[in-house]
Length: 78
Image (cartoon, rainbow, N blue to C red):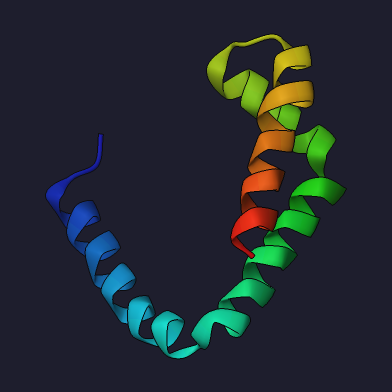
């Protein structure tokens, strides 16, 4: 649904952010990834509801499978 202008803006923003992200080093990036994992854990009920509304899947699947899996991915990569 994005227009060419939307895509160009997203690519431009990603390219601008990549330099700072790469220069941060592994430990700096890990700090951000860990913080994201903690926020996902803290607000897991909200994210489960949003996932259910977005995909139409049962809340039990979002709450017990999807959101914990996302949290584990961020913890692993941190």
